[in-house]
View 1 (cartoon, rainbow over the protein chains, first blue to last red):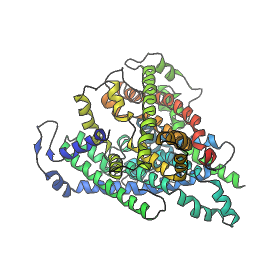
View 2: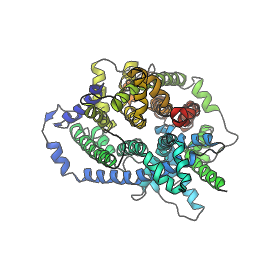
View 3: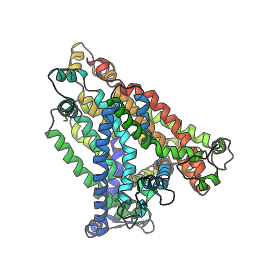
Length: 272
Length: 273
């Protein structure tokens, strides 16, 4: 089973040592692809774009999801029905949703510009603007991911024994105090899981970029994963694409390791 | 008053969440000329069901929508059962059992999450071609049926939050590992199992890239690939596409409403109190 999962990794690592296009037979070049990568400004631009995407999407999505989970964890009438609404975006068919969001951000009859126009805001060419294209794509990521993340927080919140809150209430703790003293610490395993997986996920964003901007305008939304796709399937430079994939893999490994260490150090739970 | 504020926030949020889907529904109820003559966020009244009818009556060449739906249902059932069984066992082993190399093995699993999807598809396809599983059900199912690193990670995190005392108590009462898992751990894990089930159902239902690569004929085609082919064959027939994706969404919403209960049922309620 693990061999099945790891085989592609090994193959990618091996291919990254070759000059390999679909057209010519592979030629062993050692670390040449990696040396080329180090001097390739467009690669580092992609890394920067990816980092920016993650920095916009992850905090927004995580905070929104946690707030939503807190609100949706109350015993209000119709709350189950409302919950479903927030999970719907995640159930979207990516191929279709890319199209719909293009309509929303469009300069012709775009719903967002029409809405902002109500407040006297001039139309913005969201997806063809170097400034706004990336935030727009990230917004779609947040739209799709928040309800999904909320599910985990909700499950986590439901796992916190009610008597802890009762006891702290007797001790005179307020809502905010309870949140920081009980809720947040006990959500730690959930938080760890959510952050690790959603950061890995947003580093690999592809569907929305592909459907909405194809990496443009002027590489403004060319995240590393899209760069890898373009290198492999448009330039047929598979050896180099594999080296880029190893770079992405390495970055994610490093980030995950940081998170593991952080969460292990500051926790009373057993993560070992 | 506070209740009103909470509702207001939730209703606005819910509206933003479903707004793009409102556009899907409106578009699926429009005729082709209406698509161009009305704003995409406005309905065209009285609306037409023609798009849905033509999806199902077989009038579109090369598209057997009913068959795609059926394939997707089968695939989803198989993958979900596989995921629940294998993931639970693996995650429990990683969370509670002691064996050499456990940590290393676990992180090797998690590391596979970090390999870009776009890239692993090529080697995976080559492997499938090697063993002759291209355009077969085996090929469609194989990469996912034995559980996922993602699911194992999720379940392990949850198992670790359960008090070890419970297991010790069961062990003193003479229960073996297997019966502890089935009789103590799993009943406590209902919320997270509900979550895992929904995750797997939605993932299987929507998986696009792999089915696109591995299946080449109508005998294995699933609904996402079918919807995408509406775009290809007919020069982006948005009305049909939107009708198709609306039809594809409905079962997922039903499943979510059914499983909400088990997610919502708290650990406290199921026996820790």
